[in-house]
Amino acid sequence: MNRVVGHIDIDYFYAQVEEVEDPSIKQRPVLVCVFSGRTEDSGVVSTSNYRARELGVHSGMPIALAKKKLQGKDPALIRMDHEKYEVVSSRIMESIAELVDILEPTGIDEAFFDLTSSSGGDFLSAKRTAEEIKDSIYKNERLTCSVGLGRSKVVAKLCSDMAKPRGLKVVLPDETEAFLSPLPVSKLYGVGPKTTAALAEMGMEKVGEMAGADPQDLEAHLGRKLAAYLVAASRGADSEPVVANLEPAQYSRIVTLKHDTRDPAQALGELAPGFEYIHNKLVASGKSFKSIAVIGILSDLTIRTKSKTFEAPVADLAVIRESSSSLFEELSQSVQKDFRRVGVRVSGLSYVEDQRSLSDFIRPSR
DNA sequence: TCGCCCTCCTC
DNA sequence: CCATGTGAGGGCGA
Image (cartoon, rainbow, N blue to C red; front, side):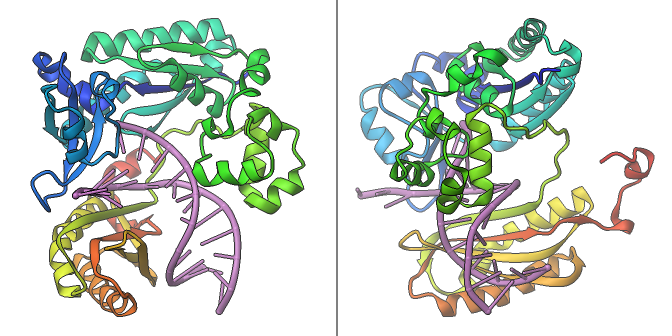
């Protein structure tokens, strides 16, 4: 049977949530900003509405630069409120889950879903479900979203991307090759600037050119996994299943320092709330970690890490603090420049028997 | 397997 | 002049 895979993406999510909360800003450029706190306007634009985009603002743009572009345009600058968006997101995900076979959230505002068995492989039936999802989100939250349907994750994601804002695009199985072939390779999920450049060097700019490429050649330039993925994806034959309830593999926290420094004690001080945040995550999820890393982003924006792995899983706040301390000691001695940002990450997460909550025994899935 | 780095994703 | 924050995954040398 046909696989029927969907991808949903809420339009300019953070900014749209802010518009719903305060409709009076809707006609203005809306910028949801991450203020780093170094100077008044330091930080970046996380999301903006379409009015702002028309005026040249985009995600990742420094706030000061965005303000310059919007002089005289009466922009609304709003501080990002992650918890608020998290609450809205959870409600939406729960509502979608009721309408699909499998739901795989891949971010705060997007998810893959599988409709293969409920649609019986029929895209017309799946399309009706997709419309139902869109309608229910609009009815309940007043938020618009874009949805794509195709025979694989890569196709579904491309469709939702092309459908935005507020659209629905379906690519039927027998339309897939013709749909993919003329697209630039950079449109494919997982193909960023570096991979695009590498492919261009091999003479490949369109997806169709990869479908017929020599796998050995691709592998030599891009590595085994990526080569295999690209050949499959370019034919719309990527076979990654939609999987519900993916467990996080790591928790991390990075902060921007008030002032650049090489002093490990300073770095540690500003990161202290980060240690607690990670510890809370571990406790809440009932998990322990096996590896811990500290991350330093230097004044020239290069990234350095230092990590260690324990023989057995641990979860103590004191261990996080003390390991980070000694790792930062080592890292600061090996770098020539000051830290601009510092972070900590725990990985190799696992459940520890006596930390599991009762619900895990009542409901063995998880 | 570990440690480190690179690439990519989203907003 | 200014450049956030979170997480996944892969390559590669040791």
